[in-house]
Amino acid sequence: GKGETRRALTCYRQVLQALKNPRNQISGEPPIDEAEIKFKTSIAHLKLKQHSLAVAAMEEIPTRSRTAEMNLALGRLYVRNGIDRAAITCYKEALRLCPYAIEAIEPLLQLGCTMEEVHSYLPAGVETSWMKQYTTALGLRAQHKDKESLVALQDLAIVFPTNPHVLTGMAMCQMELSQTHAAAQ
Image 1: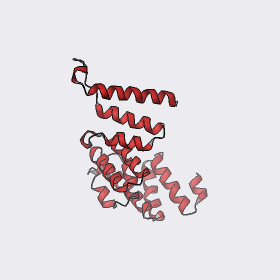
Image 2: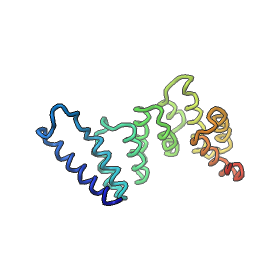
Image 3: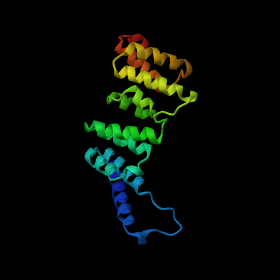
């Protein structure tokens, strides 16, 4: 509950304070990752619905220390606060760090990035052609070309019949096309 989250925040603050003093480091122990502690602090603030504190905690993490997961989380926070340019930067960085982070593709397209721009962050090769097709389908949906998007997603559904991203995308397109019966299946 909230009490546990507040206690966790107190512990995280204490750890961060202790990290400032090099004498507190125990020899032989692996070093504590300050970025990870700040990330956990941000998540705790989110659980307490303290969004501005969550953003502040994430922004304290140096850009070079952020993982793909951290960039995705910060991107979501920026979108929530209407800071689109910074969100785009975070999502692009997440894709740069982890080209298979499909969670970054849809927000980038919804924030106005072109399909070609998103494709440039994806790895090249036959084994990733499905990612380009998925990105294209999402891009078409972001452009409100639901019929074309549905066709691309249906092609992917042949290869990935149980993929929740593909199935959800198909259902959303079908709803936009007033195919409610098909979307419910």
